[in-house]
Image (cartoon, rainbow, N blue to C red):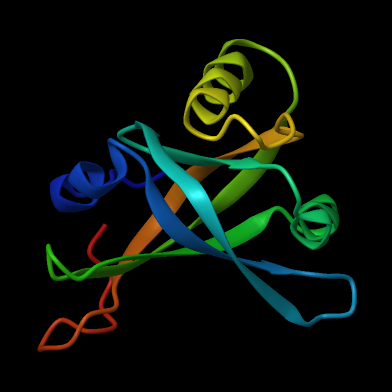
Length: 135
């Protein structure tokens, strides 16, 4: 496991759009934006899923993911790699369900929460550290 850098934690603490890449049985990558990316703790992030049949099927096949996080105001562009699991009950699920319901009342209930244990964090911005592992 890797510790999430402070600047990345700051972006994710209140929730943020993230791009999630998964791999399916056919070997092709799939990338989907998730509007509910958030920080769970120093080594874990999560997002809620409502409509992502392709993401779900891919995660059932291969739990490894890459998550793109971009915040132009903070000049942050990173890729987080990790291993995901899908949660359908429990404290985290209930918490995320309540958060989503309070923000978007017209959406159906979430199907599951994807929890990602961070393996590594990579600098994806421009400059001398672009492409380097930072955690």
